[in-house]
Length: 166
Image (cartoon, rainbow, N blue to C red; front, side, top):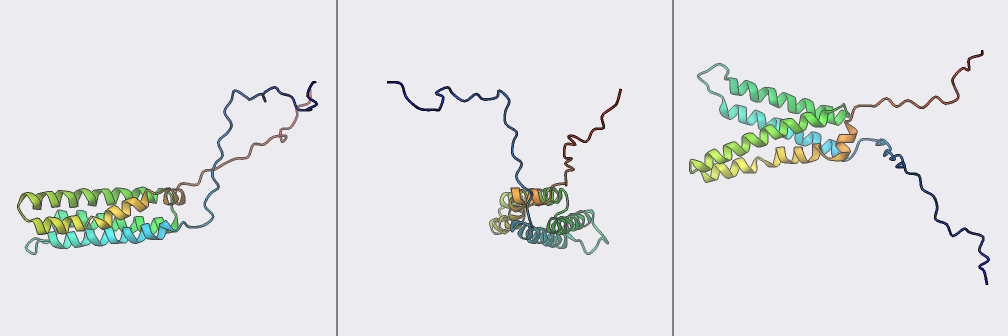
């Protein structure tokens, strides 16, 4: 006896083109991680200023190393403020400033370790908490999406064309 099903047993036909990807909706408000990234950015700036204070030489008016560290501290504060405000590509500024400080602190730790100053090398490694925390928070997806540049999306203008007459 034949089946009385009204459905066809043939497989549904699929298009050879891939379906368009769904874009996630833009974040409704500031993500929770953005203020924490900003706070860690201020901590990175404080560490830069502390290193500048340690490297200053009272005999010389202004050392180039102090100026470079002060500029990096200003960039860290600017990145923290821009991330808190949600400005475009601010997460990149925080990430770069954090990576520079991580490299400086690792270099100092290695140098002090080679010189046999284990306690000082440990302190340099302990200072890594600030820039590593800032780097981890700054590169997270919610912070990157919060600070991505606004993309102009135009709606397709279908049916708005004026028809030409003969």
